[in-house]
Amino acid sequence: MSSETRPHAVPPLPSRLAAVAMVSAALVAAGGATATAAPAAAPAPTKGPCGYTPTPDEPAARPVPLPPDPRRTPDRDTVRVTLRTSQGPIGLTLEREQAPCTVQSFLHLARHRFYDRTPCHRLTAYPTLKVLQCGDPSGTGEGGPGYRYADELPTDLPPAPTDPTGVRRLYARGTLAMANAGPDTNGSQFFLVQSDSALRPNYTVFGAVDEAGLATLDRIAAGGIAATPEAPAPVDGAPALPVEICRANRGR
Image (cartoon, rainbow, N blue to C red; front, side, top):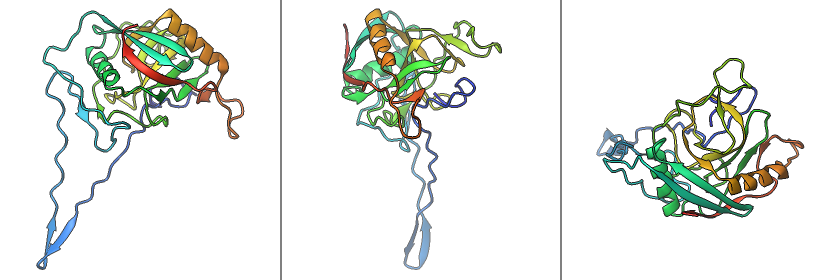
């Protein structure tokens, strides 16, 4: 999540820190002449409707190819995925109709074991934001799959009752959504909502957590957030109970 999309007075929850790359032309002297190197061509996105786009300035935290991008992206039915974590199983139901490109990418990453042996690096415990964030093999909050794709934003979320402005929406307990670093920057990081949370509707919702998964989330949240010398009583940081996705696999 980015600072633009978090509730007021809550620090940003980024998926990857956006990098601004400065590419300077290389000057090569040959025979007294100075030549300017041609700029590198921009990497091409996949040709299907999802347009997965390589991000060479933000290379993959773990090698993985671009997802398949068929002309007819599956957009019906649900898919079960289980995150087998060090703190217990987290069962997910992915909703293709809600977010077909997101589900397609998530299944691709799971199939290539991108999520295996990766930490869930961030837990929040604000009054209006209680989520566990995962999906970065580097564990820094900056890593991704080396590509990005467009948002598939929800349009039917109810207003958050804690937000008198009516701007924020309710991301209810059990929601599965993509983290991002701004519009159309989805990659591999996602968050699991442990308790009803208020956010601007700028995060793609692509599924839900099952009851056993919610019990695991509750156990992780009850363990609290790891204290540091700078933050002896933190409400945002690494889970005190380390959480590792040991395996993400399709099915129960």
